[in-house]
Amino acid sequence: MAQSAVYISNFMAEVKDQKHPQYSKDRQIVNDLLAHPVPSDRDHAELARLSVRYKGFVGARDIQADLLKVMNNWQLTEETLFAKTRAIHAIGKVYMAQDEGQDDWA
Image (cartoon, rainbow, N blue to C red):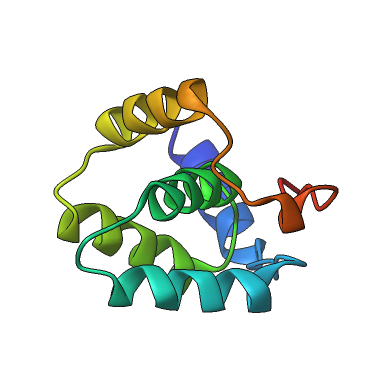
């Protein structure tokens, strides 16, 4: 058991953080979300979208921490955020027509 724990520990030490290809764009969005004390529907949708993108991602730890900070600032849990965004999307489009054709879920 101790030998496998050492192996796992050594393996984890070798795993390097990755850089997400959308990092720069996402960093700007997260900065904007941090600056909004009262979120719009689009802000909620962006927070949910980025939360899905970065959940479990090995890297971009600053973005991951700031997404949690935004959720705390807005007094949301992941569950309440996703429930709210499902309701928002059920009513209609959150993103304006100018955004059509720019799927950014990668």
